Length: 165
Ligand SMILES: Cc1cc2nc3c(=O)[nH]c(=O)nc-3n(C[C@H](O)[C@H](O)[C@H](O)COP(=O)(O)O)c2cc1C
Image (cartoon, rainbow, N blue to C red; front, side, top):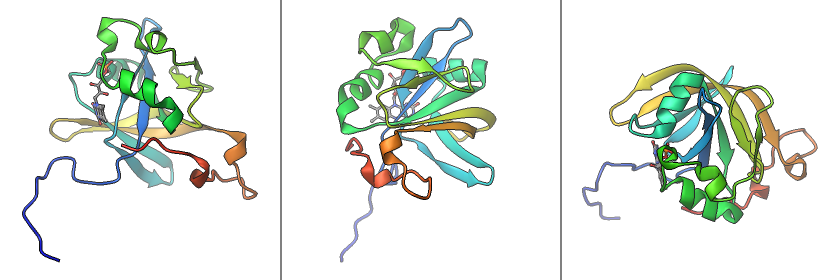
């Protein structure tokens, strides 16, 4: 194998297809696509999502101290494309793209009902890395499609037809 010097930016693959949903102090819901995301602790269970300060959602997450990570299947491609290319500053984009939402069980943020897994998080820390602020979210509740639960009570992620990026 011969190697070439390659660009540095967003170099980790695969990128997780994720929509982060959040709610402002005024009760208005919003969501954005975030592929800068990963597990970052198993005890306590935590995930990390990277949001740039220019995003409308950045302010909402700072205000509320919580967010929901929604895993996105192929069937949600239209919603993914919409929330990843429009800003909540310009209106209610969840309504505009017809995304079904419900209240989180624990945190003050909406879940996207048609995503098979929704992970409710409270922000416990954040790290300004450069372009992004990495919000560290302690997991408070996980909703999973019952059909994905295996005999051990774990999520069978192979049952999700993840959106391909
Ligand atoms: C494939 C894809 C990946 C993205 N990843 C991120 C990301 O990791 N962090 C981020 O802040 N924005 C990311 N974005 C951009 C936001 O989703 C987008 O700017 C969105 O419109 C912001 O909405 P808001 O202003 O309502 O928060 C991504 C967009 C796409 C299409």
